[in-house]
Length: 336
Length: 81
Image (cartoon, rainbow over all chains, first blue to last red; front, side, top):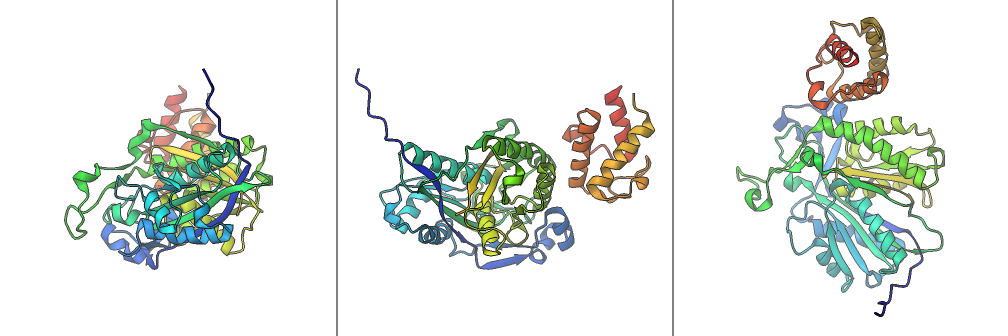
């Protein structure tokens, strides 16, 4: 029997460009508190969140992604038609099919790039970066666009004390492509489906989703068990972060930047303590202004650190993201 | 075998480290939430640190029953017995 031709292995891969989209409307805690009988101070001390952004009707999962992607392509110096694959990590593209990725690819002018959505909740962006790195290395794509995007305000219950003040909207995108020196470390990733119910959609879409936001049924579908999630994220994820550094042959002293999924400032603080990060490592704290944007939070936080001058192109950054599933993924990257 | 007072002292050090509460305030009759102002997330951190310190398991379902420092010390004592 004749062997089929194997793909010709590709070059080293790195993040070549980054772009984000932050929705226009800034929502302070004061706008959230009445429906959950809470206070600005309570939200700040429990989560570190001061404001978040909610997308308007004209800011969709697709439009936010397209805007973020154009910036990422421009920074990478890549034309949309050079993209071979578009990967969109999201849980809030409310059509099961077709994918957001196919529509985004078309609007960018990337057709006929391969395109698909990836369901790994808050870990989705780091899953996507790992896949994209592998595609470039294996030779199945030269340039891959990885987008993390959420419009969680569509699927959050504004009266739910555990989630309404946490979840928010936004998009971030990176171009992964060929380079001389590899800039994405081996991924450490996994899942724990035994704890599927800690963060979940409480009913399948066709049962719950109602297009009329004024309807009593609403789209009240994301639920979370805060304390067990805090425990898992703060302590078990710190172990995953340590494994990731070991696999990359690095220590915390080698790092310039720590960019955990912006789940809750208290989780970030607990992880930073558990990792014993030295003072020179910049820690992403975008959650204070942006809330928890699930799959979008890592690229959004990356952009904020660079925009604020706390991180620079070429810096070594530990990324770790974790969420509903439960699922998680972490890698060290050179910042684009 | 650690005495009640030894467990309380170690726990007080943990509460001090996690929540910045003076260790001397962490007495058996004190409520974590009402007297010491340890919120639910700090309580999780205290529990995880206590698990490591005493080599015991304190499941999530059990944490809500540990209202006072005395409850926590008694739970740890039972696990160690």
